[in-house]
Length: 412
Ligand SMILES: Nc1ncnc2c1ncn2[C@@H]1O[C@H](COP(=O)(O)OP(=O)(O)OP(=O)(O)O)[C@@H](O)[C@H]1O
Ligand SMILES: [Mg+2]
Image 1 (cartoon, protein in one colour):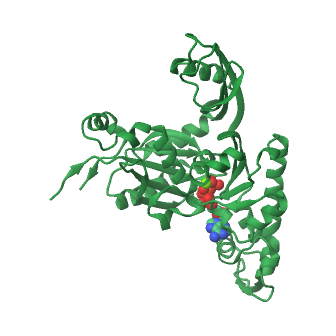
Image 2 (cartoon, rainbow, N blue to C red):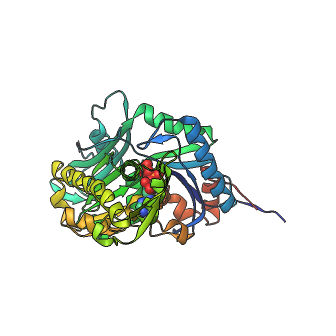
């Protein structure tokens, strides 16, 4: 017997340089999110986080989405999509408005955020996010929820993120070519932070680094809000290239030995543990030690961490991250990376995998899935009524019908 029902589902689509991941989350009556479908496909059409081949990207998206749909038993209609790349720019801005009736109303909050976002943006950029950091009412700072407060002057501090018009249009085009609508484009590291950071880390001050294949994306939080974001063009692909060049081996083999035997600290790798390495052309295979492999891997990670340290100093956020750093992304899985980072930053460092998520835990509890899972968590906040009113009878049903085009229709 087949029954047609509406499920409260959200879809996150992480179009990365190494892989495309689609995760389907079901919002449970208590607001928790359960991952009910997951699909991944190698990514062939991106370079350093930016689409360079539309056809290849569309194929990867199709495969990932189809796999996730099959597992979840649904058909996706719209998705939250992650965006990154060197074209992303971010900065902080401030807006001030008079409070109209001596008590802050929602319209005053909207007005002050509009005032803060009224910045001159280059014509080839579009605004992706305007994230409120804090509000100030009559000089009283540190306010997160100003509605209802008495005062005459409302000030907002926001973090703004912009991206290249053409790069984001290309990304959108790829998703739409697969018959999907884009709910929202979300900065990848903002999404990852939803999946891996703890509330006390965000409060005390933390720097999250998502080390992927093409880019390393950083996000600094303090006082519960995002303060700084940046995209750096050094990540796992460079490590693979270094191995390929140093040992004169084809890139796919370099990738394989990196993932199987790699280590970011030579002192963690035995010098008598030998690995067979394929050569290019007709040359015979050679043997090399894990220790030698680690000596090739370490400098690139070290360069990345020094680069991040410099970026934190440059932007004046180094002294803000009292709770240290959280590393996530596929390349954070390399043994020895945490210890190497602690040595460079002289701060505590931990590895971050997605949390606050139920369901296919074994699949999604992987640092490479942080962005995709974070997109679901972001989506649930973006559609708060979805989480709260998803399954209640009267109002919920009406709301469900209203929002139905944004979700899936489950067919059973
Ligand atoms: N076990 C592992 N040890 C070390 N590196 C790994 C491991 N597994 C995956 N990687 C590396 O992680 C990188 C891919 O990470 P991830 O899946 O987070 O990238 P992505 O999201 O596709 O790319 P980006 O975010 O840069 O666009 C590749 O360079 C891969 O070699
Ligand atoms: Mg990524």
